[in-house]
Image 1 (cartoon, each protein chain N blue to C red):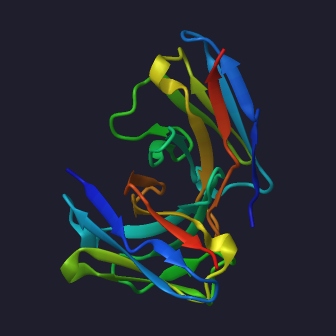
Image 2 (image 1 turned 90 degrees about the vertical axis):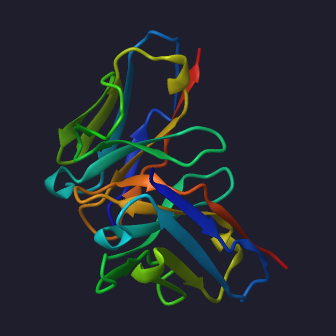
Length: 118
Length: 108
């Protein structure tokens, strides 16, 4: 069965950095685009970034462009999000998700909480 | 950026009733690239509908999606107890991908 497991969240000070990881299993990881989506406490969903299956194409929300970098390692079935220059408004649960060919994100991880606070 | 506005903010209904949720886009959504998700407290979202009207794998047929251009609807024909949750629409036809603010379906 498809599983996505995020890790790497935690408490970080403003201006700090964090790297999130997402390990995939149960499907051919290298066949799929992958997304990061976040949800601030008590708020709605915000798309953050996605990456193509071969890493040739990436896209970012304006709110994170220039600060966050998405990457993947198909040999390790892993997706990453390098987050630099973190701000209080980046505090959220971060989900990784599989993007289906017709669009939409059909499988999601359980999320990892990132808290940016001094 | 395409802004998605969902209405109503909260829908209070009883089990067995019909739920109609609206998602209006600020600009036309390309090729009906619109999805609906369900989220329950403490859980990740679940994909219900993609391509405006196609049900995702394993989604019961009481869930249906319709619409095109700027106006989209998610209909739950008869509410089951497990359907009380928050529902989000998402457009993925243009960058950046955006979500609506959500509609909460609560038990009346």
